[in-house]
Structures are given as structure tokens and as C-alpha cells.
Amino acid sequence: MSALPALPALPPATAVELEFDRQVHALVATGLPALLGLAEECFRACCEPLRDVLPETARGTGVPFVVVVPDVPVLDVLAAVPTAEGGGSSTIDAADLARFRPLPGLAVPPVPYLLVDVEVGADTLDVPPRDVAPRLAVAGRTPLTLAEGLALLVSDPGVLRSRGCYSLLGSRAGDERVPALCLDGERPRLGWCHEGAPHTGLGTASASARVTGGPAPAERGSGAST
Image 1 (cartoon, rainbow, N blue to C red):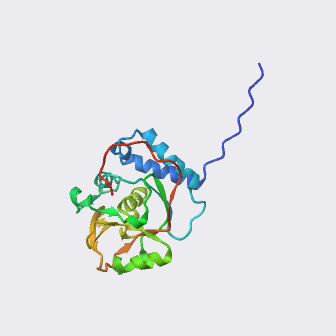
Image 2: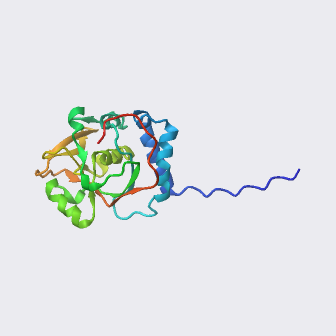
Image 3: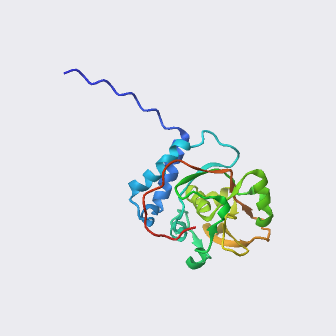
């Protein structure tokens, strides 16, 4: 019997692909698949189409991309973010948190997507979020939602210390509050700031685009959304 021909070697994973795999694994590690009523394999399959739209190079000085899953149960995932002092906490309770929804004009995808070129807003420190909004529009950037800000934190639990705390102007509750992620000692804390109040240590996070890569995921269980 003749020997079977050797299969060609698969190309090595690129640094961008390895980062994608790391971020998906970080989401899995929070228990997100079970919280959404999905098997881990199904959850990973829902994210896999994003591999085809990964950015080849960074666009600026921000985080090149963040894997985002919409409709995440914020408090559960926040509590599972791994830090040396334990998981994150929130000063906003579940009932109040449910009122914060993405702004309609952002057209947030209903499926897993990439948030591209993410900045926490170092250039907007001490500027009220309300005044940052028109700047972002002129620059062609979009404010982050609660789910997006949380995804950034999951992808890098040290981001609040290394890059700074940030408000999430893309999610609102119909009042003057803007949700924000900051530090409580060494632990992440979700709270809110007033849209018209400047904060020396709080920027307004933004990104350049939201990119989808495939069909909608399978039906999943209920959970608090952002």
C-alpha cells in the first residue's frame, strides 16, 4: 500500500488571530456562554465569523479591536472580571441598570461584532461627556455602550489602571446620567456621572467602527441586556 501524501502544513496563527482567540477565551472564562443559555462550543462558533474581518494593523494608538457580545448580563459578567482584589461591583442595581439602553442612532449589531480602534478618551479628561458627543461626531467616531465598555474590561482587566477610567456615553437611561467604569481600590466599579460634569480622571470612551462578520447566533436564553 502506497503511503498517503503528506498534508500541507497549516499556516501559523498571526498575532491578531491569537489575540482574537485570547479575547474569546476571556469571555468564556466569565461564564458568559452559560449566562446566555449557550453551550461553549456554540458560543465560540457564534464568534468565529469575526476571524475573517480582523483588522490587519492598528489604526491609531488605541486598542486595535475588542470582541463584543450584545445583550450581556452586565452584573454577572462584571463580577467575574478577574483582578487581584476580586471581581467588579456596581453602584447601579439591576432594575436601574435595565433602563440603560444603547442610543438608537448607534445601530449596534444584534450579533457578536468587533469594536475597532478603541480609545478610553485620554484627550477628553475634564471635559463633560455632553460636550464630547459633538467632537466624536465630527471625528467620525462612536461612543461606547455598556456592553462595549464591559467587553473592553474583560479583554484587559487592567485597562482602568493602564489606560484610565472611562464613561460610556453610548448607553443612556433617558436622564442626565452617563454610565462609567472606574476603580474602587484595585477593583472595577460601574457607576455613573452627570452628563454635564467634568471629571479629571474620567474620559469618554469611543471607537472608530463596529464590524460584523457573519449570521446571527442561535437562539439563546434570557439575560439582562445593555
